[in-house]
Length: 383
Image (tube, rainbow, N blue to C red; front, side):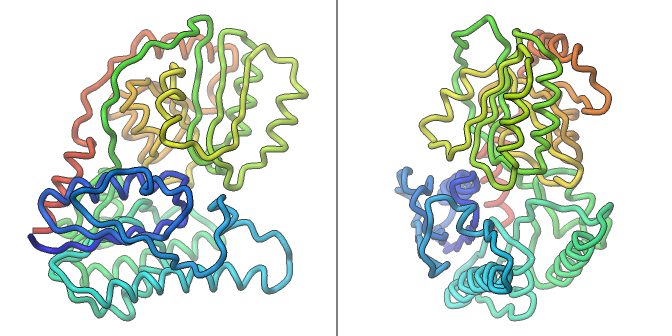
């Protein structure tokens, strides 16, 4: 079988991306001799999987003592001295350079990069001495407009890197029609782009035990982009004992102290619980089975698709969508739930919106984004 090297250089291991890396690796290994190289983390989902068809190569590319919380590993440097700013940048550059060096020493039929940042794109563009017949790079977030300040500069650099690489690689894999369209808008030929997608595995239906409350779940990494402060305030203002909001996931940059103070200071009848923790795979089933609705609340700066969106599909849960861009488009196009805006919804309407959402849950057939179909599309592009 032809050899394919998969690079999964995730700095967010226990926050979800290794499910994606694992499922794709497993899927395309039916057609290719697959080796997957990733950073070694103590809580990696890859440590809990059975690997019979492909090889997992876990190495410590960071070369620094790992903490259990990956966000502490890579993000939270709180002191204000010069070293506290330089060290994270140096660490990231060294991290991605190590992955490039590893890939450049190998050769085979295909190279599939499942997660990239501009640093790695820059390294590949400048050095690009790779011995592979097919190279595919996955872009999780594709947006270049409507930004200001430093982020605008960052996006311009990203756009230039992607355009520069387009002539050196075979394909870009994206997650949605919107992402494909935005790449075409900056001059990437349509034949260089295909929709791979983030996926799901269907789960058996299971009824929730507590029927007295509508349980709404916000799941996954707790980040500012999810606007959890607005979400929490809306549910508090709804002031109804019929609703329950659960916020579960590992905190990255959300101010949880402020959120908890907001809840404690309120006399609302709405029940709100926050669990700041890495969720082991074994716990995910119970969390989703115990929920009625999945809520997505990303701001306009979030332009990728959402892992919890596909988990909602997997568990046949309707979606209450406050998000924008590709997340909103998918919810609308596939009739996955109800779309509302924080600035338009009235708190006293929230309970009726949730009730109607449960009654109208169509449970659509969304097989295009099953892991099997995603893997088939990627395997076909590697031919």
